[in-house]
Amino acid sequence: MSQTQAEIAIIEDHVRGREDFQDMAEDLKAEGREYSVNVPPSFDKMEQLFLFHNLDGLLIDVNLRLWDLSKRLIKRVAGVGRIRDGVDIANLAFSLFRRAKDAICIYSSEVNLEDPKWVQRIDSLPFRPTVISKYMNYEMAREVYFKVLLEKANKVRSANPMLQPPDFAKMAPNDRLHAFKSVYFNSANWVDCHFDTVGDYAWVVVCGHSVETNLYGSPLNGGRVRNFGVKTTDKYLDSKSLKAIAKMRNYFPFILWNARKPEFIEQQFRQAGPRLVNIPQTWRSFFGVAMARPCARAYVEDHERRALTWCQELDEIGKVEAAKVIYKRLLGKTSSHMSEFKRAAKQFELPQVVDILAGKVEEINEKESKAVVSLKSLPGGVPFNEVFDLKMLKQAKISFIAQRFDYTVYQQPRGDIGVNVEPLYDEGNDA
View 1 (cartoon, rainbow, N blue to C red):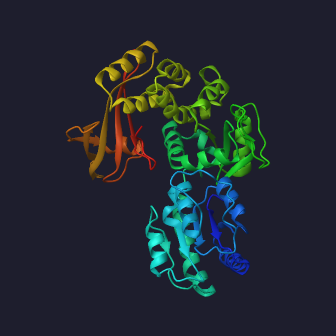
View 2: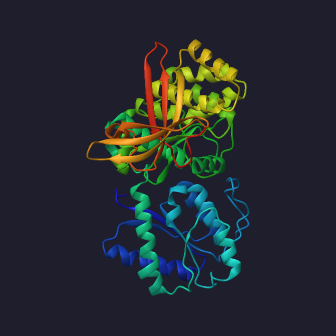
């Protein structure tokens, strides 16, 4: 797949409607537009598309009366209940593909979406989809709505952190880490839904928009394995295999770990090996990001020693990430909890968080390469302003007014003071 292609889905229950959209897609491709259009023929095929593809945009018919919506592959997604029509499918799509919210369009060629019944249903959604409220004919669909969808999906695609070039592994460590955190936080619901439905495997490789169905880790705790024709391996890929996949797909392959249940974490560390020796070095910091929250959850649920023992196996980036998340989890507890964590971190030779400040960019002076930033301690501290080097902020992917970020000061076991600056991601950086 080309680096320039967006991937969209057309959700339509009429055969003629699907054929028309496929014709439109071919017509627009002949004009030089590059994208991939998926038109699933049934509800279950639509769900499989949602599970194995990370979509950039969707055009959804609200009145799916010809499809059987009662049998679902996807059983559990937070905030999504029974699927009755295309409005509920839009809600499901929003939950799974949060970054594509501006490219989710609702239409109908049969019902009037200005009817109060449909207005009320659409207004109840947790986001504002693009609504094509008039009855839609072929020419309107092709020349207006379909092209608008492609433009919106292309904007989503251009910011999709999963679509990294094959030489991504050679980029600066900070750039790689920022991209993976964006992948991790933006795709958390999709990843959990995938493992919940397809089966509880240890990990899966995603390259570009698509899951690599022949690259799954082993099943966890003898967990469920569904008949999706996936192939598993007991070992992580080596660097040579990673390069081969990147060359073949023309994208960098990301590994996404299954951390949706606390009981999976012990196995994840066992498979990773001491000091993560079994994981290719390119992925080790990513593993730390994926395991930081489960480690923090274990710590606050009275498994302190086990959690800190896991943290010891992480690389330096992973250790700082885990320390930050545990610290934020303890902010609402007593000062004795925080003191105990600092003592334990010292005992286990882990970074000790000195403070985490909430930052917000107030002003930017490009000419002088400076930014005025409002900072305050968590939680509920009194804000104060500081002047930052704009170049330093941009290196941390902080570059626009009103952007929020965390400013973390920590101390390494040998006494060195470190600073970590990073933006808040869509799914939140809060623990």
